[in-house]
Length: 358
Image (tube, rainbow, N blue to C red; front, side, top):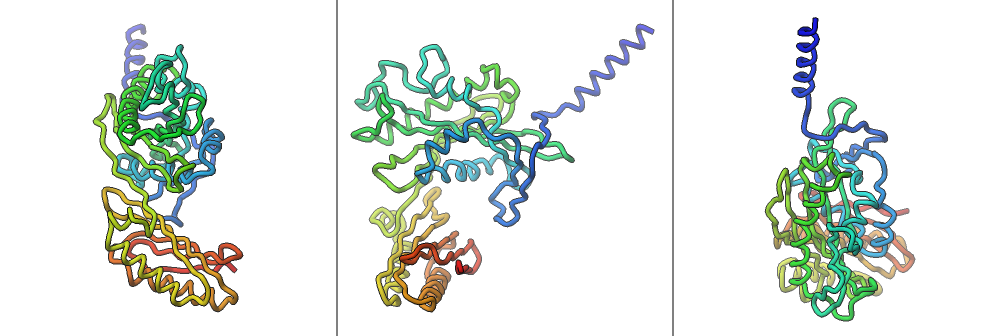
């Protein structure tokens, strides 16, 4: 009987080991959003618990364009490793206040802090605060009603300030910020491997990225991702990320993309010559590896009749369909002196479509 009991125990353990998959099993505790109204670059989203860091993230970034860029661009980078076709995304569940405090707060008791140690001078700034926040996204696969965690993406947000977290009189050079960011990647991965509260995820694929925020007192542009490292059971290689946001029609836009610059100005001039009163266009384009990906345009019109609004909105739609050489996503927000009146959307490979907001 004893031998039979031992045999049963061995079989039980073997079956358990064979059935074990790499990943963390989770029950969905909320709704699932298919995201079918958006294109296939978006993840389906599952509503698990809210991130403990959501309030602070909002406080830090609600008044800047970084609020959207940190999250959305992290999804785009993550899709290279966790496909949108078979992964679901949720808000971060593992990096909470305790983990953030260990990494981001300047604390002599924390051996994992990625802030400069007390007494450090960087680019002439004594005791700077280099890291402002950490943003997490979790990626799952679904089997029946179960969701298994398959990977995590982290954004370490660099936003250099003085020792009192005030804006620097002279911004740090990009090279200084980049060098500091590169050093943070290894420290964050080491923290994940050794922090007891993260033992559940340490063997999963983890994408660590570095985001350089924009000083909102000096620029209206959003920040950009500068590094990524895909780590799976060891520290991965560190890759440069070439993300860039450009205002049209600025001298910077002309220097990096003369064709789109000239075409944007042609559309702008067409609008001005067709409008009865003052009209203007301002665009913000996103470039990845030197290629334009998207542009958001604000059209500002002075109109007195609904006919004027309809005519100028249609004119803009026709122009973005016919004038641009490169094919990229475009959104135009058509504003009058009384507020937003229409939206024009042109997805890559598609004709522009307009919606009048009345």
